[in-house]
Amino acid sequence: MTTPVHQLMEKGVKIHTPETVEIGPEVELHRISGDGVEIYPGCRIYGGKTLILPGTKLGNEGPVTIEDCYIGPRVQLKGGFFRKAVFLDDVVMGLGAHVREGVILEEQASAAHSVALKQTILFPFVTLGSLINFCDCLMAGGTSRKHHSEVGSSYIHFNFTPHQDKATASLIGDVPRGVMLDQKPIFLGGQGGLVGPCRLTYGAVIAAGSICRKDELRPDRLMIEGVSRSANAPFRSGVHLSLKRIVVNNIIYIANLMALEQWYRHVRALFVNSEAVDGLSAALYEGMKETLHIAIQERIARLSAYCRMLPVSCNPQTVQEHRECEVFNNCSRLERLFVMERNLDGDSRLRDEFLEGIYQDVRASGKNYTSVIQKSTPEQRAGGTAWLQGIVDRVTTEALCVFPLLTSETL
Image (cartoon, rainbow, N blue to C red; front, side, top):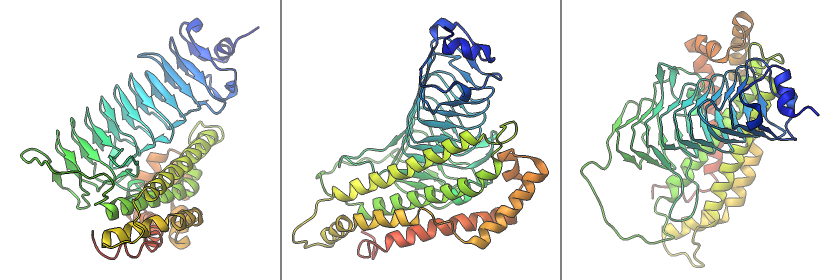
């Protein structure tokens, strides 16, 4: 009886040392291309949703385990564990990667060795160094592989708090401008960290060795933290002094993911090509949408869990206690609002004008996503950004209206 490994070899997959490679019985072999795919010794491929497109190389630095991943053309996963993640064209991940659900790496994003990702979205060209834990983030910025946002080696995104919650997703860049691939890079220096939930804008530079705990929405700022200052103060569990900032930053993060969902639905759809010779494979596109949907659900669940764990006084006396009660009591209302807003696609005039221009560009120059977006005019990009920002602003405004006391003034 012919084994799955030998069936793949018969269709053209180059498998080094076939006896060391394992293919799960649930894997749909027709979803693995035979065109230029190489699988090195010790690799394991599982999952009925797994998709591997032409030119992919698995395990050329160490064994790779794949489980229900969507892998685009010319991707290199050099060694590690990858589950329920999406990798678009020309993504590279080095040895020792640990990539779990909710991850989308868009075109030409890359990471060196020993990088851990979960619930993370990297826009095109974003580059991660080595020895990094970067879960629960969205990062954009940069215009090419030579002009890209970067995270230095030995960096960590702190995504779990002493209050035992993970309402900590950080927005490094944003969706409305980031998708246009025309923004300044963001640089997070090595041997440092970012304490979520945090928001940074384009042009931000965090010096190596710094732990950043504050938002920075002014462009082109250099941040150096913890070089000459230290503190030692009492800590009391259950006191949420940053309540407003945590809730607001989580809402803005979710609003950006909802805008990205509309971008995938309307713009990325123009680049789908059933033959996947030029453009986005239909199966890979479906995997992107499904993974983004999971990412949105994850962020809503984490924010809801945070709201429901707040200490609620039976007889609130302080402004802080009243606000905690408001957030706790209105959590279900916020969840319902997010469900209602999932199909919000923004200003139809701005959307259609932008889509018409992109459609014409696709017809003229083909379905290479990054090339088409980068060739769009400044006027086109401004219109597209305004469309997406409108979605972010509406979702954020309506969500914050659920908490009038919380947002009445800064805590």
